[in-house]
Each structure stands twice: as structure tokens, then as C-alpha cells.
Length: 253
Image (cartoon, rainbow, N blue to C red; front, side):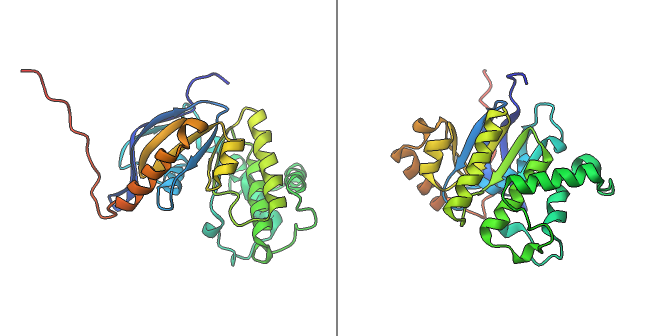
């Protein structure tokens, strides 16, 4: 990989029904970056991730993918976004990770089945292949989602709260996968709430509170002053506000 920016945000505003949830975000993520995105509840982290993966179009500004295609980005949503009542087995759910490369009707041959089995083994779900996803515990569900990401073999991996509400053993196993991706020079962007985990495992951090508060080395970002500022900004944000527009500088006479 070159050291050109892999993701570029140029004065990006994202939101719903013309109401902004993230605004005026500018910055770049280089290939191989391990970046935590943190902020209070309602800070816009999930909205930002939906913009990165193309689910949500910017209201203003642009998100550049540095020549990547949609198939080059793997997305792990929050478990709340998964319909656990859908009648699908663990094996078939993980197999959906092949859709972007093989197509919806690309078929599952022996090679693909072997890859699915390897992904399940890598996350410790041997023997769960035929289980319905609705029968899984929270930790098992998260392992399954990681298996699908593994199968996608993507250059950019976007993880929305991947370690919430799971046991310590599952969390440790999945953090090992994140470390593996980092050593493979994949770009990993993760929304997190555990600041100790961020400080220990993520060299770079974006602190978001609808607008960016700080972005850079984790030790420089996660200061008490920055965290207080983020909390105040989220508390003061008006959900009914219209997208703000930066004024152009005055023209010289």
C-alpha cells in the first residue's frame, strides 16, 4: 500500500431528513491506521460510519475513499441493527460476507464453504454452524459478526461498538483479531466507549461530539478538558437544527 490517505473527509456533514448529526468533519486516515472514534452517546459515531460505508450520503462535503471500492470496506454494525428473528443459520449468515465479491447469486462451492468454516474456527464458533442466529448469546453474536468481517478480507474495517455487552474472554479474543488486522496493515476504525481500551490498543483517536473536538495521538486527544468539551457540546446540540453553512471569507474591495 502507498501512504496516500485511504479515507478523506472534506468538511463533511451527515444527517437525516436534512438535520445534521455530524458536521464540519475534515481529516484523513492513512492506510494501516488503527483509529478509535469516541464520544458521548449521540455524538454521531454510528452516523459517521454509515457515511463511510455508503449507507448514508453526506448532506454537504465529501468522503473520499482513496480509490477503494465498496467491496474493499467491511462493516460490523451494532448488534441492535441485526434482526435476530430472521431465520438464518450462523453458517449462512457468515457466508453473506462473500456477497460483495461473489455476488448475491454467486453460489457457495467447496472452496467458499472451507473459507466460512475457517472464519468460524478463527472466532471460536466451531460447532455452531447450524444454530439459528436468534439462539446466540451476545458474545457469540459478536463472534459471528467478526467471522463475517474476516471472510470479507477487506482493506478497511469499520467496527461499530464491537466490544459492548460481551464477556471478558470474548472481548480479549476479538481484540486479538483487531491486533492481527493491524499487523496486516489493514485500516481499522472502531467506535468505542472503554477509554482504557482505547488508550491501551488504539494509537490514534477521533473525539466526536457531532463536530470534531480533537483528532490525533490518543494521549493528546483523551484529555479531561477535551472530554468535558465533548460532553457539553453533545448536551447543547439542537436536533432540529438545519445544516450549518460556513460563510465565505469577505472579498477584498
